[in-house]
Length: 163
Image (cartoon, rainbow, N blue to C red):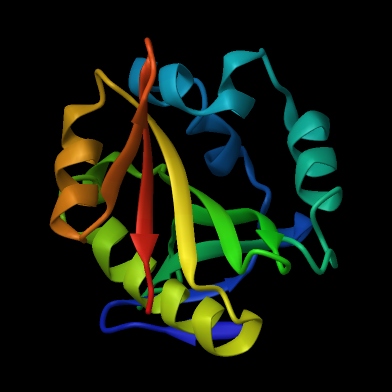
């Protein structure tokens, strides 16, 4: 499965996409290890391969690799789970390649993948959790029309209505 946006190609993430570069995203930045749950444990290549493998071919997960027009893997976006009963999906995104952070990747990728989710899965709402200290992400999500639905001690629950 492939979704094309203006600058990126989103493809189903498979174990073939698991590389040393991908693994390095979890250890090279304190910000990543702080906000991505997988990165909070010392993972190795086999852990990452298993993590991706466990999510392959599941109906309730859309796990996409983000590629540039030069076929460079720069990050991932994941919807897990996709809840068919309440027509919602929980989203997580990682822009692993530092050179691409702050360049509008998230908004473009979320727009393209959310349109796909709405049209192919019937998803009407996208939910996410964000750490209260991750100000760049909160600002970006608000620009994309995500609304804060709940505040916790550590962060915010946010919702994007696709209708």
